[in-house]
Image (tube, rainbow, N blue to C red; front, side, top):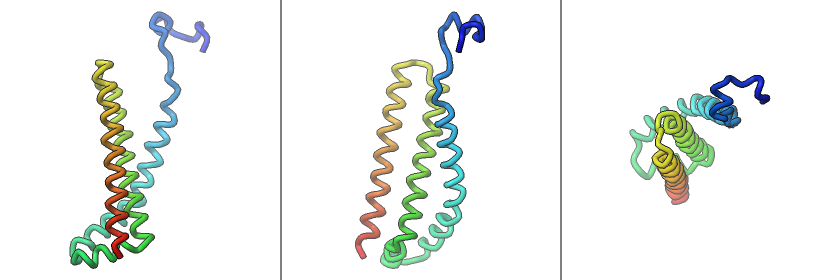
Amino acid sequence: MSDTQRSSLGRAKGLGSARSGTAHWWAMKVSSIVLLLLSPFFMVGFVYLSTMPFDAARLWLAHPVRGLVLMAYLLVSLWYSYLSLHVVIEDYVHCPKVKLFSLLSLKIVHGALMLVAAYSLIVLAAKF
């Protein structure tokens, strides 16, 4: 962007676009659409599983399609949570050190939750 197109405040601060907002926006939109498509399956499955004994529920989850859909739902919902909280931290935390710590903590916690969710489903379904 040339200096003639910038405002005087923009020239004084030297700030411009970070050029990463479009990818983040697309990731949010795609993950929300995936969640909309997978949510009915998750809700029906949750109601169905809550009425079953434990061994029958494990057998139900051992079906490859149902297990993969449930894993996709959990991972996409955690990814959407990460993206949403990332935006909140970037917008409302103003201290650079606190922002950095918060973003790193957010990434570590969500990564750990994704690993635990995937591992739990694999172990639960692999028993049969």
